[in-house]
Length: 419
Image (cartoon, rainbow, N blue to C red; front, side):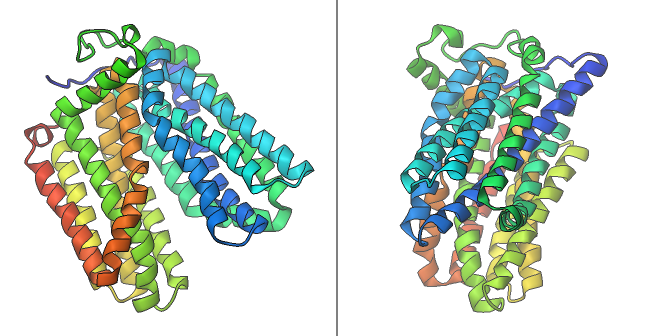
């Protein structure tokens, strides 16, 4: 089985450029809404109750349905179309946010009410994330995929970088209800922008002749379990897809928990206190933004070796944290990790969008999202298990694991030959 590039049709003329702009604005706004709402939700729950299990309960209410429904959502994307699922998910977000605005403004919501509405947002996220990734090649010409992915991911990185400060500042100035109203307004703007792409996406979806489901049947003719199985079988049997998904999953396990948990401990022990942890994390956000834009404006000509180098850079950065004793050095190293992660993310997503058959793309993108979000709890467990041995051991083990992953990726002929 081979994975060949699939040329998405270029949107014609000025109208096509407008569609690309709407896509970037819509998905960028949606990413900003995610970043702002997470901060709003955390601070609101802390305001409702004492810090502790309540905060974790509400955040789990968002994460659990999102992780559980990602793969079924990928089947829906392939069956109903990426643009349709994106629009439905966006308007569901708006409806839930408006309901939460009403509850917060005119009532005294309980934690259970907030958790239930947050769970509905998790359902919307499960549908939106794979659909939004699959929508891009249906609207954007193949030659612009890297740049558009970079802009969308850059908006997400920018939201992560400034979102906490903006959300906290606005809440302090105007209160929780007005802030949430503003977030709902941004979500509505994103929904409007992305809903305008329905017609353009219908022309671009499903136009790669000669590609078929692995079992020889079109996705529409399969039951949902068989369709999901067909997507999983494709991802497992295709060496390029399998290697990229494995790299994304391992990096997520070895980086997220160790950087957040281990970084906080490192700041207390070596960097002068907890306040320095925020500075170090800002380095990750700045590096992510730079990596996204770099991958979009200077796409690599030898993508396979770029993937290997990106994984190796992340591993070297993780191992390098073991030796840092100054805030500036730790910030620079974490910035390198962020840059490598973002650059790698743009390259991997753009490659899959180009080469995976359109009728399977929703299922594959759902696996990409799953690899980036579902392993967070395991990553925290890894950090918890290794921390008793010290931060040096934590970062050396995790960095070594990522470097070993780079070696395994480099051993894959499908990766080495990727252009």
